[in-house]
Amino acid sequence: MSFNRDELREILNVYGRQVAEGEWRDYAIDILKDKAIFSIFRRTSEVPIYRIEKDPKLARKQGAYSVIAATGLILKRGHDLSRVLAVLDRKLKLVN
Image 1: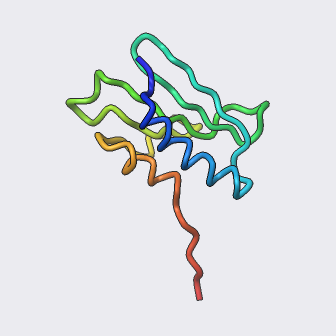
Image 2 (image 1 turned 135 degrees about the vertical axis):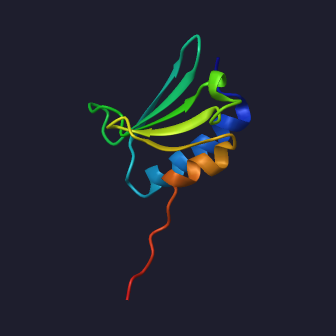
């Protein structure tokens, strides 16, 4: 099980924007027999702050894609990767 080219492009687009803003610094991709994991790090020596997982066993239930925080909290899960990744790509709003 792995991410395909289109999935990686979407993930790396979000990742690139966050790197440009100085929020994230490193990533790792783990390909396991039952799922693929894209881990995001603020610093190389730390634990991942977010994990983007693709688990095909959940595709018919909650959705194959999920974003998981460092605490293990599932921030978003679904069938559409771009909608799941939106939780990581929030825009800052000016408050008056």
